[in-house]
Length: 103
Image (cartoon, rainbow, N blue to C red; front, side):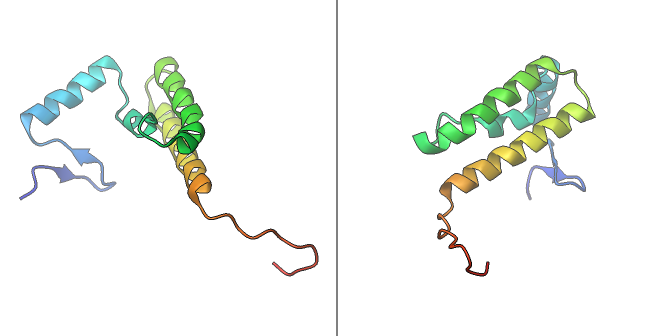
């Protein structure tokens, strides 16, 4: 059986002592768990170019704003925007729209 539980919103709940200890250390240090999703050094240059500004903004927010629900919402929205930007960069370009042609 899996060593983790999930609550209603699929948030990972630590069940092993070492997982719980790591989570407590992160919280004590003020580290936001979501920040791992803003890493961009591993990306190819074209995607890194899109992702990096979001990562830098997210880091500024994590370092500057006080803890709370709105800070979490802010970081989640920036993550959504970053993901959309990366997807836009890797999506196939759509054919150019010709004037007068129905959409």
